[in-house]
Length: 223
Image 1 (cartoon, rainbow, N blue to C red):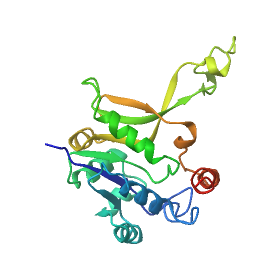
Image 2: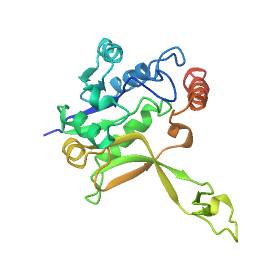
Image 3: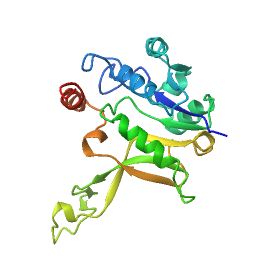
Image 4: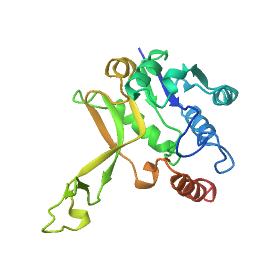
């Protein structure tokens, strides 16, 4: 029997660094509308669910054809742990698998979502989920000391250790694991690398402007 997979988009009011970043103007639309529209176009999904405490965002999602999850204010506060939020959202879903996707990564292409889904269904038994990562080729310092290089013999940046960071652009995992582990990562995730430009996450006003310029260049001017 075919497993049912739905996308889960988390958004909330009260952004601290970029005011109203989920629904403020972005390239003639909003981050929320762009992500909902994109995911609704993916044929492998059985539905798109927007989880929010904000009535305006929920209404925007419903008007586009998405399902909604009315999140209790407690699970949208600045003090609640993300573990509690993941468990709460996944518990409200009606599906077997969840594609977890943020609106703050607008440069992720539909082709990457399709590729992630294909990879997810061909994973070996060594993995139970898939999540996106990006390489970190930077000179890191912890407590005033080099963390990933020898301070007495500076390497070339390309020769730094193979360190990766989670980007949270795309995560796919069984719903029950998201509930039990209280995370959008499985117990043994497969790490799916995305191109650098697709991995941009909007966290500051500077990020917002950079993403807007790149989105216009990659998705609008090149149509």
